[in-house]
Length: 114
Length: 114
Image (cartoon, rainbow over all chains, first blue to last red; front, side, top):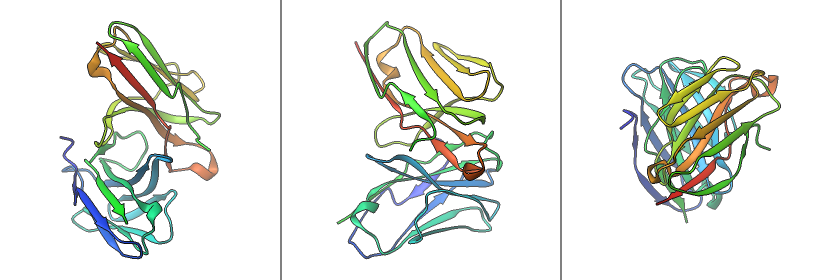
């Protein structure tokens, strides 16, 4: 158990819909990362937040948005869903903002868009 | 295009054999991390290498960071079935367009049969 929690574990929804994925980091960690993992793309970095502020942005679509709240939990919002958005979405946390800090991954949310 | 190229993509060996997985890039990384991921679960951090030329050992696993900090390798001695999994290398490149973006290699799937 990494100490990072993600909800829900599974999510099935239809195209065009909007969903919210939630992540609670390990106690004491200030950084939260979001990743998307699909069979053909591998693990793709989406976005990083540090202490409530956006720190780095990767291959995140405009239909996707995220935020980190004062209690440090984070939410990833996915809208106008397409079939290709079906994937495992992971959240990770680390104590600091720099890449030298170890990331701890949550169990993931499996999103299926039908 | 993957910034971090991992080879081989797939490795199947018998218990007791040795194996080496490679992670290469044309870019310099301040640090590289190695993870192991099992199906349906989040990656689990194995090690972080920071200094060029650094060698770290974790029981039967030996990790090496290249002198130029552009490549790394993972060597497993006397592999066991419990070593089966997807091995991923990851880091943040210091190139301008990749600054702050955590990159993962596509992974090497290792299967160790009894």
